[in-house]
Structure formats: structure tokens, C-alpha cells
Image (cartoon, rainbow over all chains, first blue to last red):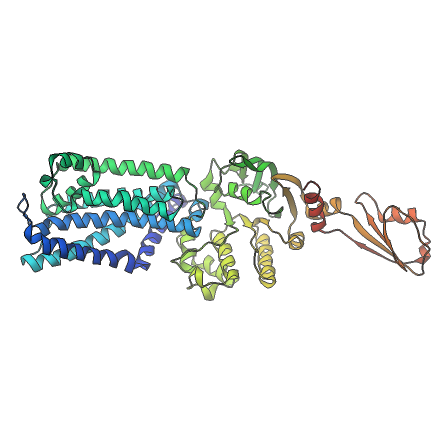
Length: 265
Length: 302
């Protein structure tokens, strides 16, 4: 490998490795807690309440819920990973290391994004496995994956977009409070109202129209189509909205990286 | 990069934070292979200058050139040849010393850097602590880790911002020994410190800045000679009756103490005194110190 090529790939993979090691070192917090959360959602909503809910599409409520929870886990963890990594690095003064070494802006953005995506995919997969267990116990059969490549596409695009949203917020934030405001007051409502727990077909037309403006609706329905083969929104349109969301997040994260201070909080 | 290319040139550098101008048009250069001391009281602008060089801050005006490359125009090159030791301790919460150095090597494009890492850890007495996290290290070890990080990529220019702040005297001495060793290996070093006695011993040249302005720059001993007065004590065999001379500081039983400006030779003084050489038993001449020079510069306008 030439020295020039080494300079571009080694720093990227090093930073990516650091991100993965970071969440593995606190696995109880980053991987186990989401596992418990997903189990509780599936038990309470999917198994207990789900018996009394019938859907227009004909699939069981538990089957409907699993893809939504997989995507919610993936997006939430991708966001949490990159935002807490940069926020923590700012707090410790470690972010200055990124600035004083020859890491490029692109390497920082993409290594941190793929680190967030890695955690999002692992937690999403764990959620899927837990969902499978509940599904097998209640239905006596396994829940298949109808379109694996489509599933992977929406998970990767969504995970990267949310990891970059996390970067953007963390580069912008000057305190941990500001960091948690975005997660708690903006992201969580959008996730819950993005069709994780219900089909927008069941909503009043006013709310159904309003929900169309929530980009998470398209990401979540993309994953639902990948697993179940059903979606509340046209798949092609969902793919375009998801890619546009990723592009927007990338541009904003890059902008914030350029203008923000790397100094310690 | 030619052998005589200046490792660092600061040209008309200005840095403002809002309406406060921390650096006011500072210019100096650092020569290849030297230890250069950037001295000044707290808030003088030393860290602001270093922050511009490592691109943590953008200059408001002027330039910082590293081996002829503008740090704003070609930052990836300039950062690849700089080792930077910040003033404040950095806490890498999740990782141990070895992992931190491994990451740092990777950021500089070095995938397999075990030999270099081991040499640094051994040399800085951190080898046995390599599996410890930063919070498990003592203050001195944390400082040494900062230096270790700055050296993993074999930098050509090392910037040390108060590397011995809060460090005990034994460790300070060993760190300065290491700095001299690095100089012998061809590394150019710019350091800031409040220990002026140590700076006087270590630095080939110094710049003194105060309130954002460069007050003087030059060879350390040349500056001391220029800015301070020599103490000359004439020891006499027998007691002398009281004499009057504008440079006389004190007259004791067998001693006459004078303060001589750099422009005056000791011989001139003796001629002026008209002393019979037979009564002079000894002459004790001591130079001023860097601290005296520093006080002379910093004290004059503050």
C-alpha cells in the first residue's frame, strides 16, 4: 500500500475501530439495555395488547411491530453512539486529538457514522432475534425476511443518516443538556409517531396527512417491507426520501464539523 | 523539506476572540534542530499561537508556516510532521494507554507501530502501566502520556505547551533530559514554560511575548547579556576607604559590588576605578539570569 493510500484508509479504519471498541467496552449500556427495552416492548405491546388488535393488512400485530422495533433500535442506537462519542470526547478534551492529527473531515464523518451504524445494526439484529423468539412462542413458526436486500438498504441508509444526525447535534451542542434535548424532544416523538407501533392507515385523515412529512415513516416502512413485504407508503418513494434524508444529514454534519469548536466543554 | 527549511515561521500573526485581541501581529521563526522557548506570563498569547499552528484555532490575520507550508492551506501535511503536547490533561475514559497510542498511530496513517510505541513507553517509564486507563494514572504519568502520544509518528517539530505544569522536580528533570535527547535525534522543539531557570539551560533561543506582543527574540544567552546587568565583585586584600562610582551597588569590608551594563567591559571598570592591581585579590563575575531578562521585558510596561 502506498503511503498516500495508507494515509487515507488507515486513519479511517482506526477511528472506526475506536468507535466499535468504545461501545463494546460499555456493552451493558449500549447493547444489553436495548435488548431489555425491545423485550419489554414486544412482551407488552406485541404479545399482551397485540392479541386484541387486528390490522387491515392481515398480519398479526406482533409481526407488524417487529420490523418497526428493529428500525427504531437501529436508528436510536446509531444516533446515540455518534452523539455520545463526540459529546464525551468534547467533555474529556479528546476531540482536540481529531483536529490536531491528519484525520480529514471526510474520515471523521464517515468513520464515526459507520461506528454508529455498526452499533445500530447489532442492536437491530438483537431486537430481530428477540422478536423471532416471541413470534415463535406465540405463532409456532419463524418470521421470515421477504426482501433481504431491501431490508439491508433501509437499515444502512437510515443508520448512517441517524449517526450523522447524532454527529451534527454533538458538534453543535455546547452542553450535555443540549445533546439530550434533541434526543428527547425531537427524535423520540418522531420515532414513536413514525409508524413503529401503528399503521398510518388506521389514523384520522388529518393525522395521516401530517405523518407523511415525518421522514421516519419512510425508513420504518422500508424495513417493514423488507421483512414482511407490506408498507404504508410506496417503496420507491420511501427509498428516495431515505437517501435525501441521508444527504441532508451528511451536508449538515459536515457543515457543523467545519464551523464548530473542537475545544473541551 | 530541505535541511535548512525553517520548521516554523510565524508571520504577522493576529488572533482575536470577539473584541479581545490575544495575539497582536507576532512574527518569529524557529530554526532547524533547536529548542526554542516561547515565554511570557499567563494570558500572554502563547497557547493561542500554538493553537493556530496545530489548527485548533484559525488566525485572524497573518500566517503560520510549518516547513514552508501554510497550516491553513495544507493542514494535513503540517499536522503530519507536528507532535503537539497540550497544556491540559486529556481523559480517554474507555481506553488504556496502549490502545490510545495505537489509535493515535493510526490517525497518522501508521498501522504497525509497535516498536516505536514500545520505545516511547519504555523511555517515558509508562511500559508497565500500558494496560491502565487514564484515570488510573498519576498526574505525572498523564503528562508523560500526552508526550508519548505526540511522539508516536516521529514528528519533525514538537510543540510542548507547558509540559511540566504541576509536575514534581524529579520528573521535570527527566522530561527535560528527554527533550534534549529528542533534540539530538534531530527533532526541532518549541516549548512554553514558567520555569525560566530550566528554559535558560535548555533553550537555544527564546522569544518573550507579553500582552499579545513579541517583546524580544534571540539567542538565550545573547538576550540575557543584552537585557541584564552583570554583577562584578572586586575582592580586595585590604579594606579600602569609601569610594563613589555610579555603578557601585554595595561596598563591604573587603568587597566592592558593581552592576555592569552589557556595553561595558570589566577592564573599563577597573581602569575607571584606578585601583592598584596589587590590592585586588579576586574578581567574581556573574551573568544575569533569564528571569532577570524576563522581568526586564515584562516589567517595563506592565
